[in-house]
Length: 113
Length: 115
Image (cartoon, each protein chain N blue to C red):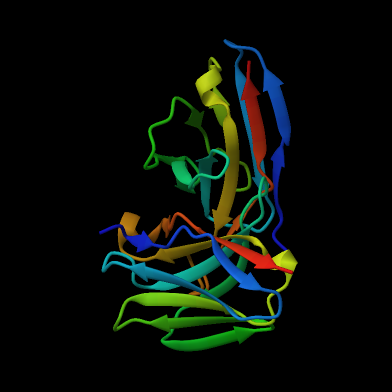
C-alpha cells in the first residue's frame, strides 16, 4: 500500500455543486495532513491543514479527518470553475523521522459550467 | 502568504552547462526541500535539509547537488545539464520545531529546459 493514496480522477462536478476529494493513508503517515491546490504549470498552494479527528472549515473548504479509518477528505462547497485544478493530499508522520511530507499523486478536479 | 523565492523562474540552457537554481525563504524555517515535477505528473522529492550544513538525498535519485550554508538559502546545482534534466524544480520550506502547525510552503518553481 502506498503511504498516501488518491484517485487520479478527473472528478467532474457542475458549478455550484459540492466536490468531494478523498485520500487514504498508511500507518507510516499519521500525525498531520494537508491539502494543496495546484493549477497547471504552477506550484502547489496550501489550502488546508488538519491534525485532529473531525471537521475543519475555512470558507468554502472543509477538511475531514478520520484516524480510525485512515482517511482524510476535502469538501469544496459551491464549486466554481476557478476551483478546477489538481488537489494534492499530503501527510506527515513517521516517514523520515517526521521531517518529510508524503504526497499523494493528486486528484484532478474539473468544475463544469 | 509564504515568503519563499526561486530564481530564475524559467531557464533554457544547452547541454553540458553548469547551472544553479536559487531558493531563499525569509520565514526562518529549519527544513527545506527540492522537488522535481514533470507536467501532469506527481511530485518527487530529490533533496532535503534539516538545517544548516545538513542535507539528505530524497526519494528520487538525482544528479544534482545541494548545499545549506545559511538557514534561508538552499541552492541546487547541476554540474552538467542534460536534456533528461528538463523539468520543473520546486523548492519548499517548513518549520518543524516550536509548533505543531508544521505547514510546508512552496516557491513558484523554476522551469528548466535543456536543449
